[in-house]
Length: 144
Image 1: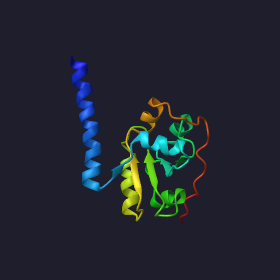
Image 2: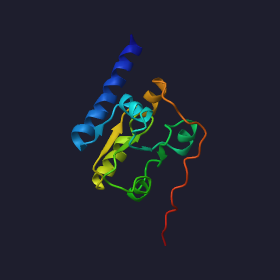
Image 3: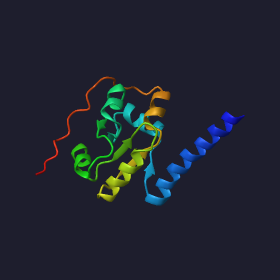
């Protein structure tokens, strides 16, 4: 019974996290199921994967662009330069991605959504993944 209580508490905390980002910061969600349908129909938005490069290499959604969290708005803009393009931000469980979705929205992007539980749900739903691919280089930061 103790494990059931812990499980229920964890689920409530995860839901509260998502609701807080939605109500408090205006971050809207796209379900992993909807994203999967869009990818399968070749109608996917720009997918920004905010996991680490190692996590990304282990498996990712085909066509996803890896911009590890934390990222600057310039790094995110490199992945999607048009602020009016639809973007969905994915992570493993939805704890990094809403922060990046909020950052993009605050930076002037108009069609940004977060996919809570994205990669975890993607794998559980049997979504097609790419393994071992390099995330590709982002431009080097310039500075003096």
